[in-house]
Length: 490
Image (tube, rainbow, N blue to C red; front, side, top):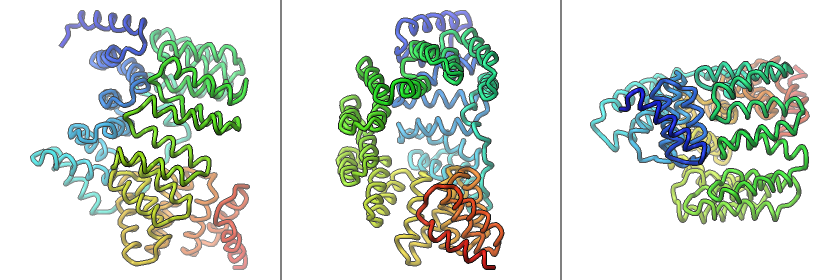
């Protein structure tokens, strides 16, 4: 433990090191740790956020970021950071135990059970894991879980810890209200308060971009990147700015130059590939995304990104082949199995897709999206009773795992409607899905089905009218029109 004077000296020395080399890995993480130890959670967050952007494969950075979120009493964000750590080090029982505890606090009881069991396989004598397992299992057995409350729009974007959260909410409000002077003052204040962080220049860039001062916005975003060269936020803003000024192809070129200057930085490549696609340069786009194999030669990430890219081009067979190649080297990688499942689904091979989603869920048993996709296929691709029973089992586990993704929530409602015939219970989850994605005609149609079966004719008509009036195509549009016609006759 450093004395107070020694800690200040160490902090100054580390800041000086980062001034000369913003990508000094040990200095960046150590500085974040020292700020956290000193109770400066805002400074700790800014350093560790930059660290995880720069070195995303290090589980320790995500674990430290979870510590910051915990200190700020943000358990949901702490769980998300810990999940990033677990994904990179799934064998770490200490990370699993921490996540089990966090999940039990935020209502993810199914996930808590999975993590507690994983800890007990490693350490059968863990008292903490046994206590979490018993409590979370009891909640699962009770089955009295309801949809989580929906967060207001933009809540996650401003959910920064401590005083940073206040700053971000005030800045968002100033930008929303076109209060440029107030937004500029907040950005300037952030630069004074955190002179070594990218926050102030980044906020100035966002405000300038919103105001239409593109030259100043670009200067500010570049200044932010000089302080944190791999920071995702200013890069994303620069992509929008470059595309707006000179077209997506120019944005792609600038992103590739970032990788030329920093050959270990893979983040810009998928964005550059997407920009070249938008510019109708598919050959260049493919060459760019395949460059990830050189940047990350020992990782499954390039296989996943290339497979995803090929699916965008409707090259499902090539995507499946890329996924299969990756699975030879990384046979239990859940993300590769996910992309393989999407490829099979795109080809219309629902049985193969079902098997791949099943394998993905086995590789990562707490994957809510995989569980939902598998449940949907079990009731649509198969009609036998065991398949419907398993789909319901998956949904019951999801009910007590605090799902928030609208597609997951919608699938839960559909399975409860079709496999259990429980229209009231299905409606509850479909309403939660609709509230999170009100623009989705598919979800409104499925909710209308549930209302119709519950004999809520007025509710069914309302949802069908909104779905059909959205101007967006969806697969069941003919069925929706027929159902609306039938209901209008009642």
